[in-house]
Image 1 (cartoon, rainbow, N blue to C red):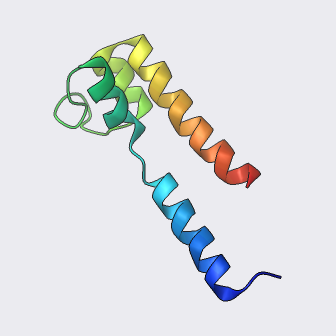
Image 2 (cartoon, one colour):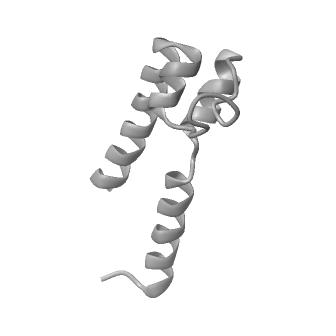
Length: 74
């Protein structure tokens, strides 16, 4: 088994990866409307789809999905 410091590092890494807001990353990359100011004001894939269109919604969902998949595989 790993040491306690290894476990703390893994938890910290998972926390940082899990806190990445892909809706805001997509918002900045595509220069779309801020999802925190329009629609349901929730920076998620559904609101990005409503506010910025299908491409932004799909990219946000894909980023969130891959983030969870990466954490699950590790």
